[in-house]
Image 1: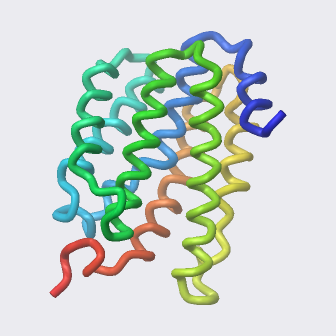
Image 2: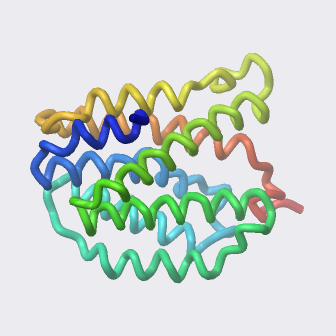
Length: 198
C-alpha cells in the first residue's frame, strides 16, 4: 500500500466535513502562490482561477458550501487557455491548475477514494518537484535551498488526519507551507519568465 493509499484509509472513517477540510488544505498549501505580484500581469486568467480556488478552500474550512461546480468549470476554461508545452513558467501554471481541478473533483465526490489517492500522489509530486527546484535554482546557502516540502507535506497529513478539532492550527500549518512554497516559486523564475522584464 502506497503512502497516499494508507492516508486515504485513515481518512475513510472521518465525517464528510472533516474529510473535505483535509482535502481543502491541499489547495491552501499548493495554490496560494498566485499572490506574488511578479506574476500579476503574466497569467491573469489562471491567477484569478487559482485565487478563486484557494478562496473556496478557505470557505470549505469555515464550514461553508461554495459553488464548486461553477468554479470547476472556470478552472477548465483557464486550463484551455494555457499551453502545457509552452515556457517553463506556463507549464508550472498548468500543473497547478490541473492539481486544483483534481482537488475540486475530490470535494465534489468525497467518497471517491481513487480520486483522493490520485490527488495526494499529485501533491507528493509537486512537493518533490519544488524541493528539487529550491536546490537547483536557489543559490547555495540560501535559507530556502534545503527546504523539505515532502517532509512538511507528510507532517501536515499526520497532524491533520484526524477530525481537525483544531481547525485554526491546521490552516496556519498549511499557510506556513504555502508561504515557503510561494517564495521558492517566486525566487526560481526571473522577471523575464514572468513577463515583466525588459
